[in-house]
Length: 342
Image 1 (cartoon, rainbow, N blue to C red):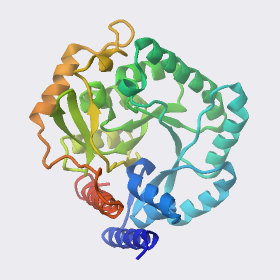
Image 2: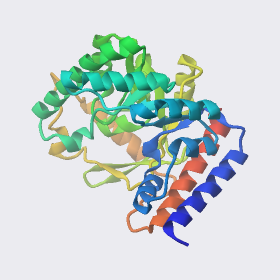
Image 3: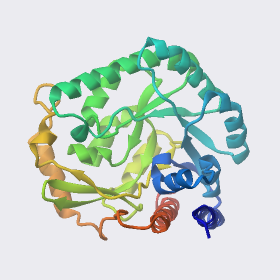
Image 4: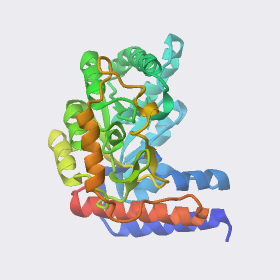
C-alpha cells in the first residue's frame, strides 16, 4: 500500500471509531498544531487533508483553521451542515498598508460564521531573543500590530484571541490587554505554554482569565535535564496539570467556551532555565522573573515524575509517528468526554 493509501486508511479508521464512540462534543475542538504528523504526511504525499471534515468525523464540535477570504461562503456552508463552530487563524497587519487586506480577512471571517479569531504572535522567547532589548522591540511590534487591528475587529464585531505562546509571562500579557481595554481583543488560553516561562499553570490561568474566550486544551509532562527541564504534551490525563479544575474554571466563565485539543506529538521541548541565554530577556524593572517562580517550577518538575517515558518521534518511521499521534488524540478525546464533560 502506498503512503497516501495508508494515510487515508488509517485516518478513516480512526475517525470512524471516534465518531461511533460518542454522540459528539459541541465544545471540544481541534487545533491544527495538534495534528502535525498527519498534516505533514498529507502534504508530502499529496493526499488531501480536509481538517474541518476530519474534526467533524472525530465527533468534535469546534475547529480552528485558516481559509482564504474567497472561501468564506464554502466554509460557512460546511460548518453549518456539520453543526460546528469555527475559529480562524488570519495573519495580522504589520503596517497600515496591510489594513485593507486585514479588513477583507476579518469580513470574510464574519461571513464564514467564525466565533473568534486566533493569533500566536510570538515564538519561544528564550530561543528567539538574545537580549532584553530584542524582546522589548518585539513586544512593541506586537502592541503596534494590535493597535492597527483593533479598530478593524471593532468595526466587524469580531473577537481576536491572542495565545499565550511562550512569548510573554501572563502578568505582562494581562497588563497589556488591560491597557488595550477592548472587548474585541482577548486571550486564546493555552493550558501549558507558560510553564516554559517558570509559571505555575494555575497562576497563568488566574492572571489571564478575565480576558479568555477560547482555549487550547492539553496536558503536560516534565522531566529534568542538564540545562533545566524537558516539557512535553502528553495525552490528557497522563500529565500533571489539574485539568478538571482548570476546565471547570473556564466553563464557569463561559459554559460555551471552546476547548481546542492541541495534543502535539513531537520530541520534548528543552527549557534551559539554568543557562544565561534563558535569562537574558528578563529584567527586574521591565520584565521580572522572580527567583521564587523558578524555584516553584523546579519543584513541580521534581515532584511530578512522568507517568511514562516522555514521547519522542525522532527515529520513528512516518507510519509509526502517525499511529502514535492518532493514539494520543483518540485517548485525549476519550478522556475529555469521560472526565471533563466536554
